[in-house]
Length: 116
Picture 1 (spheres, rainbow, N blue to C red):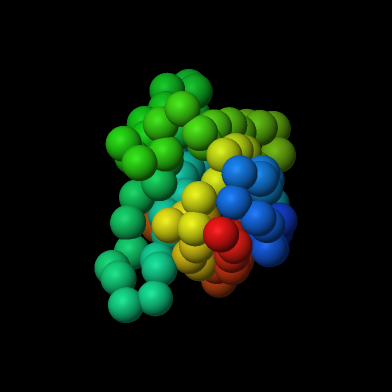
Picture 2: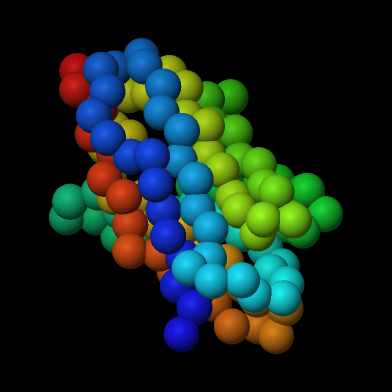
């Protein structure tokens, strides 16, 4: 079973930056949409940003202008650059991908903690 592996979470002060990356645990033929979701304690998982294979992006309103999603199709890797972080951004961030045959994949999650 292919899984997604996230890296790059950690602790940062408010106003700081962090970068996340995510790639499959082994090589797979093709991935369509990729994205990032997050879940804060006591809250439901919510969409942060998505990106299609062609590079079209979609962002949640609460990250517009602060976060940037990008991908490397050759490596099936997706990135999330997070700037101007706020304490409200503290959450576990999950990577998501949909394979060419429609199978959804999820990562284990990486903790992002923003101190005010």
